[in-house]
Amino acid sequence: MKKLSYISKFFSVLISFFFVAGFTLPFSGKFSETFESYPVAKIPWGKTVALKSDLYKVSQNAAVSPDFDLTFSVESQYGSYQPAGLRKLAILLKEIELTRLLKTKASGDQVAQGAENSVRDIGRGFKLLATHPVGTVKNVGNATGEFFKKGGHLFSKKKRKTLKKPSLKERLFDGARRDVASEFGADVYTENPDLIRELDRIAQKRMSGSAAFTVAQFLVPVTLIGSVALTASGVSASADQMVNTKDAWELYDLNRNAFKAKGLEDEPIDQFLLENPYFNPREQTRIRFYLESLSSAKGWQKVFDQLSDIKSEKEAGQAMTALEMLMGLAERHKDFTEIGFHQGSLYAVTAQRQVFVLWPYDFVYANRKGETLLNQINGLKGKFSSAEVHVLNLGLMSSGMRSRLESLGIKTADGIFFKEKLNDDEISRRAGASPAAG
Image 1 (cartoon, rainbow, N blue to C red):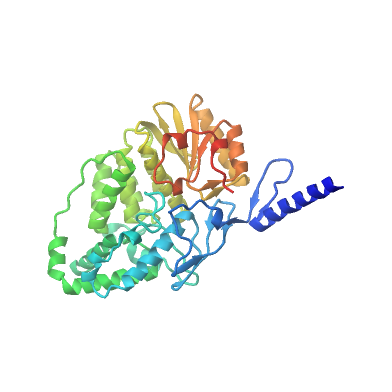
Image 2: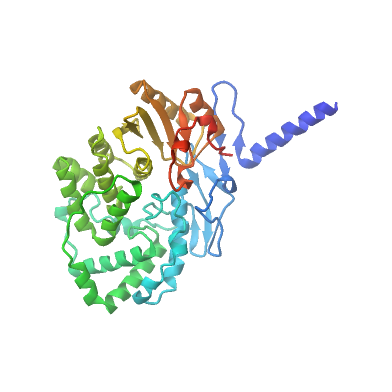
């Protein structure tokens, strides 16, 4: 009887754990998992994100979607937010701190002395993903994307030739905004309305106080940046340097000329730069630099075509994240012979017949979409029959998903968002050796 009592208590505790965590046990038959929420404290944040400050507080549980998103709840003195994704959470928390810092600055002259390193490092995460935030933050009850849709993305779906070119005054103001954003480590293409207002306020004061200097700085001739090193930090830094010093019209000309120099035709170039509303000028420029760096690999033109044909903001965000993960991998493997999308998943092949699949997801588990991803992996194994296949995921994986991948002979690494860089040990281990997702 005592033994039965112990067993009963054990199962009672086990069931309670799954209930509290928002998990349900997998049912018999075809293995499947269901997650309704994920404990925020169990995510291995490290130094990436501070979950609580005197400005904001992140709720204890993140909602899990069947599409592998984690949606967080954040309360701050500026409002209530529900950022969807690890990356957008990091961006939001950084921008809340940046907004406070900007609010303490009365004039543009103070900006250059105001960019403390501690603020620049907030929410940096995996060094490519949050240094210059480009995602959407949705403030509950407010249309935070209005500025971006009306002005931040200059071209939208219209042809450039049908738009009136901004006046010199407007372009000078845009330049002042870029300078302020760059000095603080913010993104001039942010969609956060509070941060936009502060950038505009200080830029306006800077314009009124130092217009002559601004004009002189603005009239520097536009030139093409030359070759860039094939490293994640080198490529992204070069692209961001261009974005931080050129307006959207100049970026259009520079990127268009660069794509033509690589042999692309006018129609797909215009489809990407003018007709696709889902990449802002920073993202377009980063993509241009990434594809230039990877142009020796077979399939880079097809990657460009796939990006040009993207149909939603979410799809664009995931593609952008996967590309940045690929560039992080390029620091270790500079010998990609082929890159491409296979049924929506970005992959790269090395000369050593290793296939790397980049998953831009927060939390992958064994559900219906998980089965689809597993089928995609099987398809890639068939396409590259003699290759060793690796899966790299931005966020976490459930133990069930790792087991399924291990049964297919796949090597994995997860938690890419929390790493400063990738190393060979992490990207070559078997799935069973991946750290537990909780």
